[in-house]
Length: 164
Length: 435
Image (tube, rainbow over all chains, first blue to last red; front, side, top):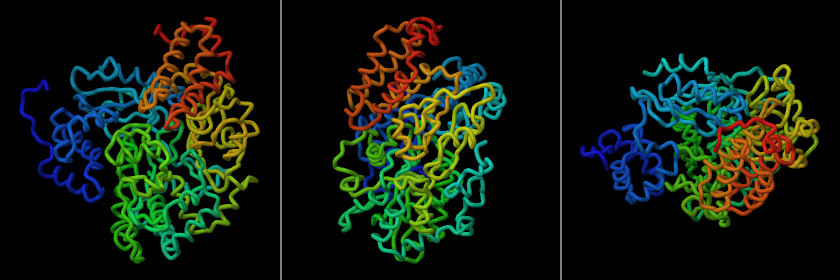
């Protein structure tokens, strides 16, 4: 816990209502764990230690258990990321169609420099991911929630302009 | 991008008939195209009658295993003493496969209708559709369609006036290939790490929350309304000589073909027609080197082997591979197979849930040895070492993830040994920096 500022709960007001609307969909509250973590990430951008403790509290689990689940799933961020999070597929079907060149172009044009690093202006983080399930439209990238297909190194700069 | 590509004359469009037609996405649009009539018909039949029709159709699981769907449904207890659940596997993550995404994107009501019919057949009141976390647009489209289906009376407390309750919950994954394995998927829905479970008990005995559960793939469930509407005879007649593989199947073709995309063909259609005619064959001046025919987890086939290979379960099995999910990765002569096998091994190492030693260690060591070979630091004994590792990774773990890592390695060494030896003998320039 590096931050000295006090943790502000996520599950209040509308987000609390959204969480509670999930409860009747499952016979056990624990099943709301993945959806609850999505709500946290949507609100805060990442899942902090404080959020882990809060999720554990609202679902009747232990923080250690919640942490075990958070770290299993690659889409939950356990540290802050750039305002726009870019995932580029480099698994074989995209790889043979030039995905590694797309990755290089993304690292260059975002200013991130390295995979997993956030650009100095805080705008972007780029990571390589395994198969995005769009192999026929190589190379696909996911920018936040936007799927962009058929990305080539030449298209990268233009695509990034839409994300400030 | 994506759809629609014009339908090829060699296709038989059943599931994909409305791909590219945004009007089919809405509840009213689906009803206008004849949608939900099959559900109405099924609800007028008994559970057993629906199961019998699907059994007679010959429909087999389209997610990869090819298990007969009607038979799977018949394993569900007749007496409903505990809640029964249907889980729809929309966690499409197998490299090379992108067919379910198209179904979710264009015809969500086709899937909802299939789910509701299946729920009726297995005595389930609740359906969970597990959509992979990365399918953000598909998740929104499906959720919107589910909301509409509730308003339209196709889901909820009194489905189409039958008095039957069927609820559907869309559950979003969060980035884990292994959750496509059915028991890992159940753990994930329950709010756990996605570790596969030991079978038995099988899901039909003790699945979600230890209750009877059936898990079916998106494409399998989407075929069901058509079978109910047009009958088992019709579906069985979609066949090219092998009565064990019936109906149509969506094949995702990707890699070095001129027209990658999804193609729906009758089972038993020659693989060569799919690769060369429908998908347009190789780029000018290139020749085919290898095809991974059923998603990345199956052994690869050489160009010669696909020449007389029919696209059905038995036909691909006879060539020593598997039809799997129908995701075909096509690689031409420009492909560095050693590098691509390393990328696949890296995929499996990344996706291993790490509970079984053979998989956790095996996928990681396989990757490191392949990286070493690619960096020009391979040892002459490395190929034997890879094969020995692969042997220890096959048939020895809770699920088949480690087998899936071994399959491309073993088949590539068997069929393209020279490419590995070129790195080992330093005849080929290293493709990777020192590791």
